[in-house]
Length: 121
Image (cartoon, rainbow, N blue to C red; front, side):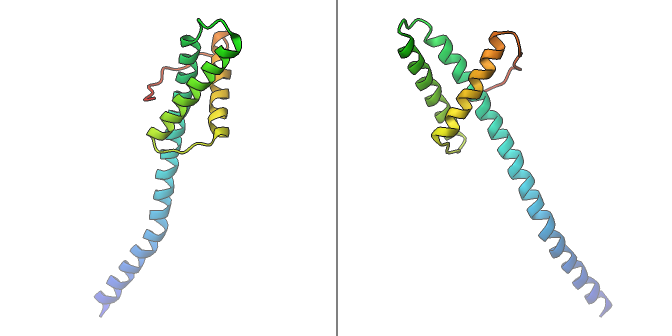
């Protein structure tokens, strides 16, 4: 009888702990994955903006140049997001591009040195 009570208490303790531990672990994994995905998107945006800057320097028409860069970066960020399974809105893509442009401008003017980041864009 005592063994049955102890076994029942242990099972109950495992169920209760599982009710707390599993959701906490799931949330930790989700947060870690989201952070890794955001870092990958940020790196993809920085790479796309830098590549757009380098690729379209020869264009003489300033407006065409600006639109070519924007479209190239937009498409590259969109592809990178799709590759890792994230759906971005136009506003989010534009925000990523704008942040990458600001960082690129800081780098150009010597205000920031970016770490080397591997990106699968």
